[in-house]
Amino acid sequence: MRLKYLTTAARILMGLIFFVFGLNGFFDFIPHPTTPMPQGAMAFAGALMGSGYFFPLLKGTEVLVGLLLLGNRFVPLALAIVAPIIVNIAAFHVFLASSGVVFALIIVALEIYLAWSYRLAYRTMLVARSA
Image (cartoon, rainbow, N blue to C red; front, side):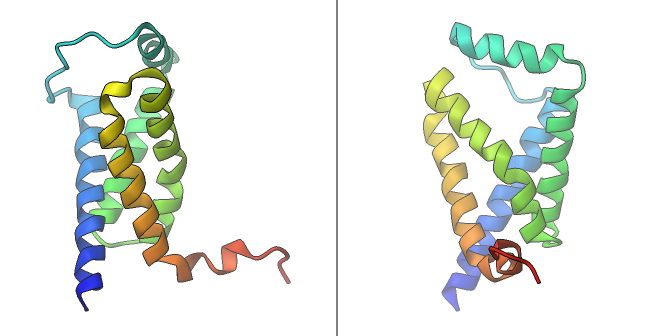
């Protein structure tokens, strides 16, 4: 019974994280860090923004995933959609900007826990051969 509440809390927390940070990509309401980002991190972020399409696509996907998680709708789909984004968040902070690695690991842990909690929904997707 308690695990149900833990799963709900993890889903809501992850939903809030992606909804808020996704919206921040459009409205820029979270203050920027005072310490400058490393050169590699700046180059990567600059390339995403410079492409003209990728950053809005990324942030729009984050907002959508956040809404799905908060609304408890299509949660397994939302977790599958956001998984590659989480891998990139973790890689960015491990390899380019280590200052946010703890936050990135929290997001990874939430994703793993929620994917495990909804593992039955992935059962048909993870068969070696389909009929």
